[in-house]
Length: 107
Image 1 (tube, rainbow, N blue to C red):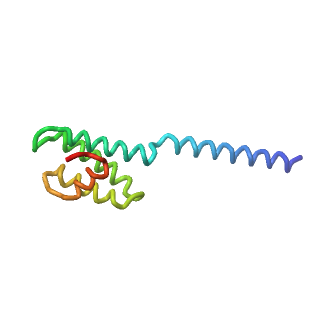
Image 2: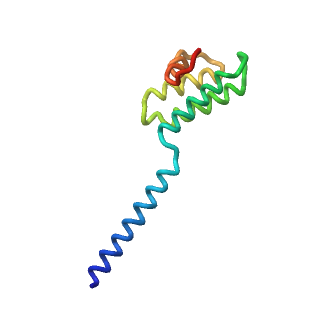
């Protein structure tokens, strides 16, 4: 009888741990959702008019942050981050065009 109670208690603990871990994983955005949001930020930046535009730069920086956070899952995202950061800070990087290509943005 004691072995049965111990087994049931252990099973209950495992079920609770499994439920807790699955609910915490589902609350964070998926890889695909984060990539979609990064590309959306790039598009919002491209849509801004003018050569000097702080709104554009803030969108590019937001996209760069998202790509940097995802670079452990796709090494190319580090290049995208570099390109976006360069343009947002007034520099130049041809790597920005690979971001545009990846996100399907006409330039």
